Image (cartoon, rainbow, N blue to C red; front, side, top):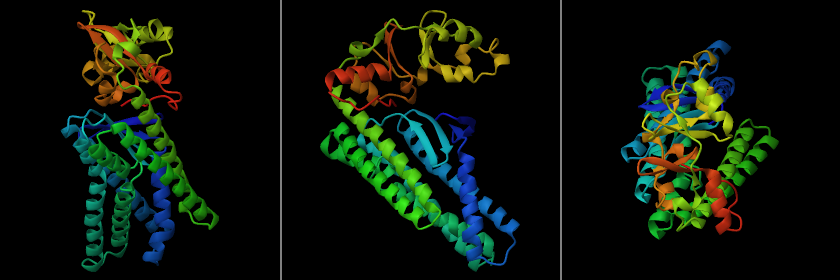
Length: 379
């Protein structure tokens, strides 16, 4: 996600923080400190409420991380490539590859909401215990709030509407029953658009009546509508690509560069010759070794670009989606890793012979379908 920065790892998965994440914490903290806590535990100073509100917001954000981590850990155990977890203003996003079977998709999708529901129950019990057994009224209020918030988060994510987890579960169930992944994705996407519209309407109603949650509901609804639309476009395009081989859509003899070059050399001698987001790189023996992403290269500090080698910041070959010219394109997309959003590397006899990008796939889909509805979101 653009505008996010790396912040270590969680359960071995790279963690990124979007610039809007602090807005989420402030929003949650202010709502808790300014309204909920004074109503539940009156008579404390504003400083105490602010500190408790911040603690509650951080606790809920940590719960969001555990929710996303459950998706990531389950996906890794199923052999799905996981790129990273990003926390942003509307929650969390885990970027991972596509499940090979409906059973795997069901397990990965259900892991997050189940984690939130279990956490909600544990934290809620701890809150009531702190209040009744220890008489820690403020601590109890924060924990009870966080517990109910986790239960609400888990229940909300189970709504049968893509891109919510419930929509993924619905898609897995329809795929399992009918055997048609694209149709299942299309139906789940339509449900997502309907749910997003209802959220926007509910948010507008709340705003008109002066409640603070309305704007948040409208933002979530808008996000759901946009994401569901992307799912629908992807389903239409994949359906249009049935029977297409990789060789039919690839760009032959693509621009590539040596992975032993410095970042400075690569930017000026290779990247300057194209407007693509990523360029394949090769090793001393001419074999493909990964993908050099323009964004990653540009994030290397200017003072270090003359020393850092491209191979040190490129996406390694093991994390790239690799195909042969004769592979079925839809089959390749089914096993695509998150790096496929940059390019699919086409290799024949150990040598790079082409690449497939989202634009290549969209052009092929337009030739086979009147209106695929936009570019394909890979991975």
